[in-house]
Amino acid sequence: MYKIDNIDLEIVNMLMDDGRMHAAEVARRIGNISERAVRYRIDRMLENNVIRISAIVNPKGVGMNVVADVWLEVESDSIVEVAKKLADYENISYVACSIGETDVSVQVQARDTTEVYRFITEVIAKVPGVRKTTTSIVPLVLKDVYQWRIPPGVVDGMLDRK
Image (cartoon, rainbow, N blue to C red; front, side):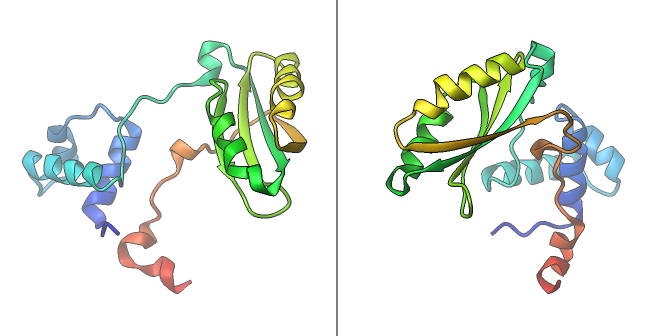
């Protein structure tokens, strides 16, 4: 496990706001740290899979205006196989295996509700092993996974004590 400190936390938060920010600017904003030290820390976090720097696509910006969460009940011996098959579809943005009432959850990006309905009934429901689907249209997302920030308690170990 990578041990994150307050400086790493500041660097990560700045890069989340602007992934193109130069190390020199990060160093200037933090103060009392060199550009070289910032680059070293960024490289170390990248190597340890703490962060990944990439472009984030806004689905609405490319005409995918409807988001649907779909939960699947799957035959127990087909869960991972079904999840892997669904991960191959370009309009599915999230795939996870779960424990509980459903076995696999996916998020579908589509142009409209008709496209969601067609994709679920003609594609997802027909994947071998899928027994049942439950769908919810998501009209509003207040926080997405790429907006998640490292809780400050991770730095000082306080999360372990709660």
